[in-house]
Image (tube, rainbow over all chains, first blue to last red; front, side, top):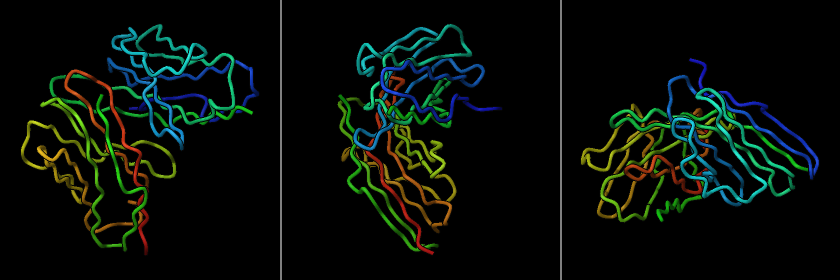
Length: 115
Length: 114
């Protein structure tokens, strides 16, 4: 099993540019989560999907952030325009909620630096 | 809203010794799940141990065990026979019944002294 795959692993961009982060969940998982990790705010949930449908986007910081899940094997998180305060590590995680089993499997993260 | 508090930003322990990391949480729910995740320098988040609130028995995974005190809303992690590879950030996390989303504590950085 390849696990959750994220790309790119590192992204450096300039303020004002569009940034797209990508995630491939574990095959068969029905939930997908996007988290952001910063020193100041720790790990925060941005948005999550169930069966490709966004369920809770209350953590999305502002309209500059958008996320899509066009199919069960792919999701994107887009920031447009990017700002220096968006610099963080962005994690994608997936899970299969079957009975009492609850475990989120995390990808390796994308370290985003906005100059 | 649920909150998770880890009051120890940093902890250190001698190799082969035992260390306990603290976690408290706040919720009005009766059914929920609690987790400890490990984040080594590679930054990969790894599940260490899981506890279902309806179970009174404390979860154990090899050298890792928890002390779950539901009334006190406390969920501490004990690492026995600490190894150098245990050095990492440890995050306590809460998931409400039916919520499917994790609320994390701020983390505890654990250092293992050889």
